[in-house]
Length: 300
Length: 314
Image (cartoon, rainbow over all chains, first blue to last red; front, side, top):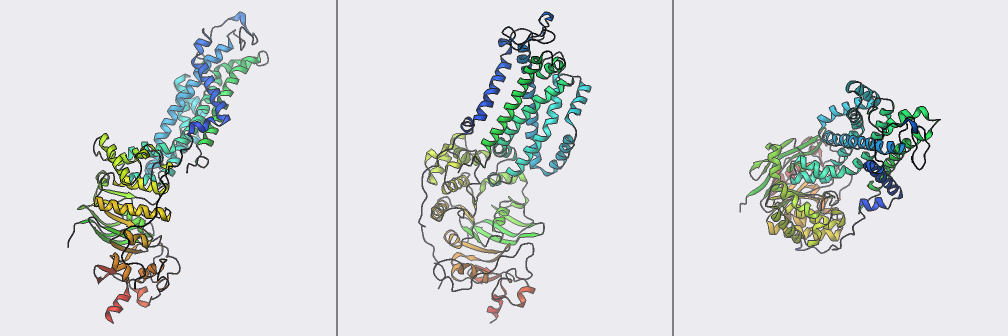
């Protein structure tokens, strides 16, 4: 007498419902439902547009010196007033934003790009990881400001110098984050499944691993952007930035600090622009993180 | 009655540092047949499945597949060979890329192996979707829009998309509801009949294995302790572990035999002699001093137990 039936049945009974689970809202839709995100995106759009459209909104050379118009308070003729050399602060802020935001954008693209490639390699190949992580440790232990000052000393203060030094300094933290995410994702069953299918390694990166780590990369990018804008302003302020011939928010603040009691608006407006940018970027990063957080964004 | 052997594994072993996950596993599967591996969790079934596909590198042993020894292939040769061997995973939520539509998921294996033109690949994807009874509208949907059973059917369609000779199914239904399990199992059997696919089927569920498999290997602590044709294993089990496993199946007759007590020992410290002796109701001195060898019982059935010697001597 057998315990179970010796011959198995031809069919087993049972079924599965044929209904599709409804799609959840897209990331963009959820972001638009978040008031903080909406406000910070709006602020960033206004700031970017005013920088891009600066030649139209405030035509003329922003560095043009008009000694007769020194220290005019904000008014209808000069929205943001004039500085110690009679330059129009409205022009300076708008045109300065071009440099500041451009530097921020380029630094973000370069440092995040390198961090993603190296982080992916580091998370995937253990031998590379050991070397790369020690380099990152070294880079993180080294004060960024010292590195940037040294770079300015060697290469001379210029936009290239600022972009190069800020990119190098900002690679390290992003690389850490990307590597950590890749280490988590590579253990997912979907990666083993892709390997069992025969997906080549490069395609594994681009089609499976990178999309899975894109959320933290996006969040990190918004913080790197704000760090880069702030970094440029800081470097320019202490005189190792983009140099006096070009205009940025940091540069504008450098000279303005001598007249802060006499004409506070010279400091106020570039400072406000800078603060608004940083605040908007950081708030956007925070709300992005909320929206993309897998624990909140469960889609089952 | 000789049939071509599709997969033949001999002396397959895997150690993770001090853990001996799989020890000297050997079996062969004829073309078009299904070989089942059963055992408790921790018995090394899933590791064996991954070793066969070289998703995990074996510590020792040979894997002969389509006449080639997989363990000697270079990584690029192995990648190309994967076209002929596919896997179905336990977790239908984890094995699909959430960012790839069903269309991309089904085209992907064909694309990476350069099978057909883009139009042909899409046609194959549509045909496979129909074969696993999902509507054509599913093509543009993403994995999170499907239920577990539907996802597992997508995974099955993906495994079939390169028209493989061998499919390794690692607990393909244990993450599913019982009613859905039946449907997926029926589907797998139909598809296997239609495509003539050879299958290595891993499960801890004896009823599932009984339904699916022609031949069965019972694993305990990384070893196959008994193996043979399905009906022999179910009707005339000879190893005490097989008997105990069968006794634990709910349904008629259960309770007639001794059920299994305790837990499977750690693979860190495999007992001396027979690995099962710590839980075996019939263990005697010889079991701790000498490891029982696999011996033929007849009708293709083999088991490793000293009791068989006694029975034969008597």
